[in-house]
Every structure is written in C-alpha cells, then in structure tokens.
Length: 140
Image 1 (spheres, rainbow, N blue to C red):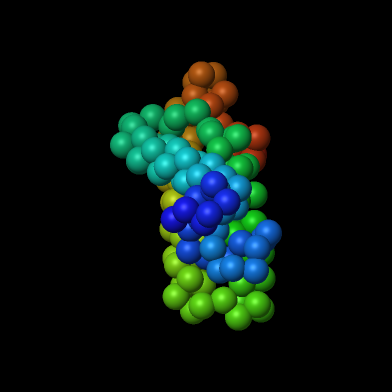
Image 2: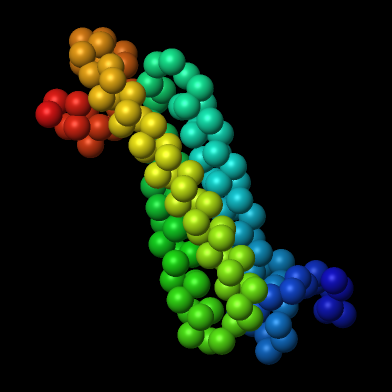
C-alpha cells in the first residue's frame, strides 16, 4: 500500500511511525528470515532423503538459532505491547515452524549417527561431515 511518502507499507506495527503499518525497511529482516527458513527446509529434506549423512550446515543452523532467539524476543515484546492476538498467533506459528525444522534436522542427523556410528567413524570423509558436537556424540 502506497503511504504517500513514496514507500510501500504493509499491515503491522512499525518502529518509525505511529501508524500500524510495516514499512519496507521493517520487512527487510523478515525476507532474510524467510530465505533461511527455506534453506533450512531444504537441508532437512535433503538430510532425510539421503542414505548417508550430509555435511553439517553450521552457518545455517547458527543463523536459524539467532533468528529463533530474535523471534522469541519479538513475540514477548508484542505480547507486552498488546498487539492483536491474531498477529501474535501468526508469529508464534512461524516460530513453531522454524523450531520444528531445526529440531527435526538435528534429530535426523543424530539418528543417522547412532545407526551408522561404526561406518561413519572409520570413514574419514563422513567423519569430517559431522560438527564437533556430533563427533563427540559419536565417540560416546
């Protein structure tokens, strides 16, 4: 929606306006988050479909954890400010979706490590695909 100032606004709270609209600047972070969610979904699907363990997506997992933390903080702030319950519910649903994808991705990797621990530990290429915490898990 054109707001008369030459920028597009979207329904939602804005940090720089008293109106209840998102500006393009406010949505810039959200578009990056959607990209990481899509990348996380792709990594999760690939991991579930692959017979061998794939390379750990460390940067993606780290960014997803940071986004989850930011989203949790935003939800708390929106709840305290009295934001519409529907908007709050949508944010919580997005948070739950991201949490599900991340947990399922990590759980799938741990299941593969448990199932094929001997093969992974004697194959250097597969061993190098694991993160440091996963390597510690496999050694136990």
